[in-house]
Image (cartoon, one colour):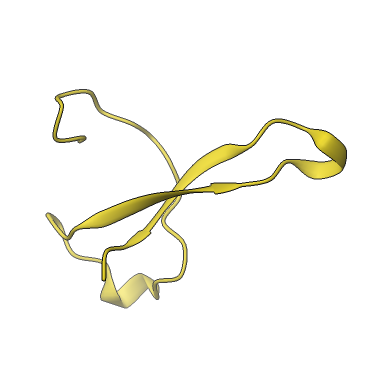
Length: 47
């Protein structure tokens, strides 16, 4: 769930599955699409 209210289904990157925690801070980043395709929002743990 985003702080603004909506829920977003996405992928968490740069984090081992066992390190994920409910409520942990995440930061959005974007993965470039293949061959000029659309970028996709993914999240990684906040510093």
